[in-house]
Every structure is written in structure tokens, then in C-alpha cells.
Amino acid sequence: MRLRISPLFVESLMEALRTVGSHPLRAALAGIAVAAAVATTALVVTALDGVEEAARRASARAFGTNSFVISRVFGAGLGRRELAAKLERNAPIRRSDVRFLERWSGEEVLYAPTAQTVADVSFEGRTYENAAVNGTTTNLDILRDLGIARGRFFQAFEDEAAAQVTVLGASVVDELFQGRDPLGQKVRIGGRGFTVLGVLAAQGTAGGTTLDRYAYMPLRAFERIFGAPESLQVFARAADIERIGAAEDLARATMRARRSLQPGEEDTFDLLAPEAGRNFVAQITERIGAAGLPISVMALFAAIVVVTNTILVSIAQRTREIGIRRSVGAARRHIILEVVAEGVIISFLGGAVGLVAAAVALGVISSALDLQAFLQPSTAVGSLLAASASGVLASWYPARRAASINIVAALHED
Picture (spheres, helix red, strand yellow):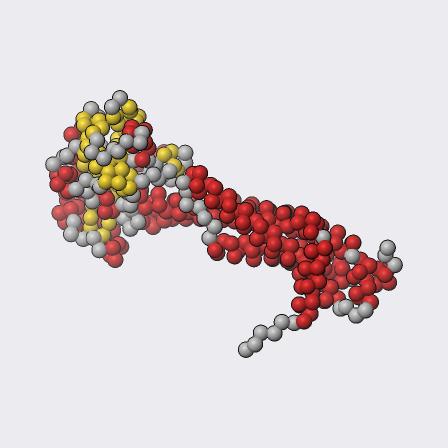
């Protein structure tokens, strides 16, 4: 099937290009407004994509992509009374509980009990204060995307032997070693010497708090220094990732058996499933997106107003010309199509300039802040379509007004 382009369309497009070309300054001023709106839209969309990806990465590192967590209490979203009631009802999770889980469901579910405290980390007279020190097992590196940039996580034999080894977060390494290679060096945590086995990749901040202040060590070494924790948090995942739901059910049933809970009795522990982490990420992006859409709409609306005024000025200056063309046979639809084409051309070119500006700005930001923020093709195409649509909206009223010009009065215009 051969595509045929209407001669009327071609003629209107050429006339619109001639009009834009004959008044470049006027067209440029309108195009700048569209460029600003498109750049704003592209930056907002890219920023939202970046926030969503960062939230997903943070969620994966905090909980694991397909992991779930068993804890005494998850306090997020709980009121003071509800939290107090749960703490009274739910018993602490001890090492004996973890051993029971591993004995009765360890073949189908991987477990990584974890304890955390705050302590200083020192090296050759420098101290990183209030690091988040985690005691855990080697399984944690399997269950969570910790993001080890250099070195390795501790192995099972080191966990069993309560070896004094550690894996440090990026902020701790930067503060203590200041450009020196940390691998193999000994730091002091809780008054004991620990050999650095690995370094985590920088994760940035969340809510103004750094995510790079962690130090991981074997749980047995943790307990020797800081004592047995009040309660453990147990990360878990199905040994076969295709059986995530079954693993959660098995872990819950095993834990209920450990607590001797009867059918119908409420759990005396909390289990946070992967869906909860994903829902949390979705809520973050949804709230940010709710603010991003009005910003983009207002920017485009401002551009539409500017383009509309520009085209109205153009029509006012060409009133006699339009009258002459109408008197020699130009139809109303011809005038409407020509004016709409003028608006779309201005908006499209302005949108292209705005995309270039947004791409340059994102490149500078990515380089300066070491972020992965790049303009996606889908965002670029969507922004250009939005710019073109705003051109149609901006020029529709002026086009109707131009088509309804009184021919006799127009011919008497100076």
C-alpha cells in the first residue's frame, strides 16, 4: 500500500516553514518557552526513574531481591501502643530459634541471622564514629545484594571459627584509609583487631542518612565482643528461587511450631515478604510522581500560553496577507492547517533544543555526582510528542481566529 501525502498538507507545511523562517526571532522566543518546558519534563521524568531505580537497589541491598525477613517486630507504620503491644506479645528471636529453623527447613530455605549495634571503627589514629556494625553469617552475601566492589565476603569456615574479619562500607573506608588499599589491613572494632576482607560499593544516601557506614563481621565474632543480642533479625530466601511462596509458608510454619502456636493463634513474630519491600518502593515513586506530573503540566501550560500569544501576533501582522489568500480561493481548512503547522514546527524545534539541553545537564550532573542519570529514548520521544501536542493546542484558537477573518476588512488593512 503506497502512502499518499495530501498536496494541501505539503503546501500548508511549506507556508508554515516560510512564516517561521521569515520571523526567526519571534519563533525563537516562543521556542525557548517550549524548550524550557520540555527540558523540565525530561529532567523530572529522568529524576523519577533514577529515584525508582535507587529505591529498588536500596531495597535489594536492605532485604534482598527475593528474600523475606523474620523479626521480632517491624516497627514501620506502627503506632506507639501497637508497637508496645507487639513487643509484649512477640518473644525475642534467639540463636536457638535459628538452629530450629535450619534443622527443620534448612534444606529448602536459606537463613542468615543478623544482629546490629553501633560502634567506632579505628585505623592508625583515625576513627569512624558510630558505624553500623552487623554480625551475620556467610549466607547474607547470597541472600542480599550487598554490592562488594573489592575483595570478598567472609566464608563459612571463618564464620564457624568466629574469625576476626570484616567487610567495610565505602564511607568507613574513605574516612579511615584516605586512598590507601584497605584489603588486608587491620582495623579495631570494639577494642579487637579485624582484618579487612572486602569493601562495599558506594550506595549513597537515603533520607539524608548515608548507606555506606556499615561493617560486617561473623556473628560469632560479634557475640564475643558485644554479647548475645536481645533479638536477631533473620534474612531468608528459598534455596530454589522458583519456590519463594512455598519457602515463606515453610519458614512461617516452622517458626510457629517452634513457638508451639495452635491453629488460629496469631504469630508471635513478624515476617516481611518481598512484596512489602516492592510496595514500599512503589509508594515512594508514586508520591514523587504525584508531584512530578503537576510540574511538567504547568511548564507545558506556560509554554502553550507563550506560543499562543506568538502566533496571535503573527496572525495580526499577516491579516492582509491572509485576506488576500482567502479572496483568491484559499479555504478555511487551508488557513487552519497552515497556522497549526506553524505552532507544531515552533514547538517541535523548541522541544528538540530542550532535549539537547536536558541531555547536557544530565551528563554534567552524572559526571559531577557519579550518578547514572541518562536521557532514555522513551523519555525523549514522549517529550517531543508532548511538545508537538502542545503546539497543536497552542495554535488551535489562533488558527480558528485566522480562518474567520473578514475578507473585506482584511483587504483594507494597511
